[in-house]
Length: 167
Image 1 (tube, helix red, strand yellow):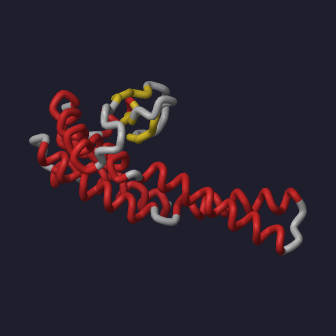
Image 2: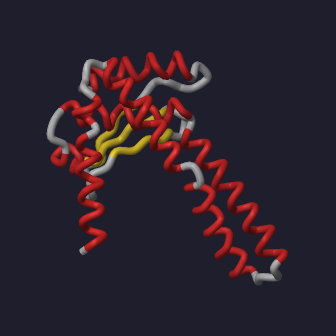
Image 3: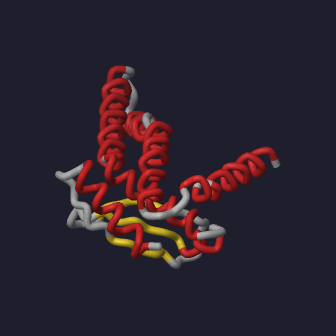
């Protein structure tokens, strides 16, 4: 799957985000933890697409894995990580000003800074996820995988989340 998807994701990245580093590094985190895929950057700004090893057992087919890969690549291509960091910084700054104006002590300001950073970072998270799903589906399709089959893992995961919240 990686041999087919990586060149496609890199080509889409170069076409849509030519100023970005499009040399994706693929990593597997084998520490015991819940199934997950993630996008990050290494210390030199190289984009990383990571998977927990437990994700491989939770996915039923290569289409699901390809969709997860493409979704994470899309986050990088769309610039979501730096946007999230900027939004968090704005949230912290706004909370600092408001906390100071309200006369909070240092601990109070720190608490509202944490809240502001969290709210800022999550401000566009649903939009970012939908954007990554859309571009990720196109990348997966271009790589020869079926995004309609690939997205089924996420539908199952959402169903498990709803069930566990009701329990």
